[in-house]
Length: 228
Image (spheres, helix red, strand yellow):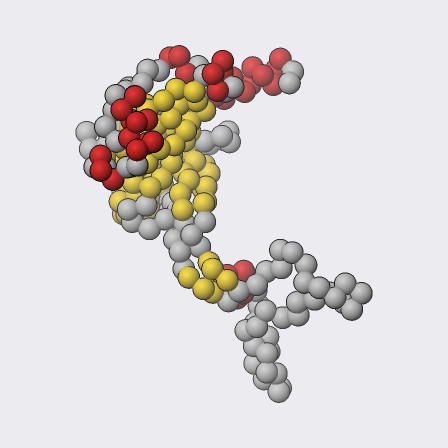
């Protein structure tokens, strides 16, 4: 890695801010210009630093952050010992955030929504809503067959094999199956409001998952102005 790329990586890691949250639902708010904006309300934090990953010990710099309370008898013994060593109460969700200097934080430190400011761009990661078994038209947006002139093949997947020379189905063929329930990241979403009193983030647009889904919110990795 060249010195310029290393400096760019360090600046990017220094700028990365992250927090864990839970999706409350969607609503509408007016911006300063009177425009109606669809927003997702996320209960974000307060999170607590459970572990610091350092370069000498782990080979990289990162923070392990916990969110959401859970009863002590609902965690297994290894996790219980992990929380006990950190001196924090058990948390329901654990995630890591890469940083350039983990020494600037301490175990037990709280991370709240005030690390973000309105107008910032964030990337939101979550598990998409599961839709069960679906065909190729719904799952992969394929086109149906003709509905007349004697056609008896309307919503099927179509031909599977290539030719007699191959005589097999290639890996990755788009077929019916389980739809949704996948890890999805939506990038470049604008923070409309930050409510520090109620630990709420109002994010413009939709984010993955149903109500109550856990989310990871990070500062956006792509430069640019918010979409209007």
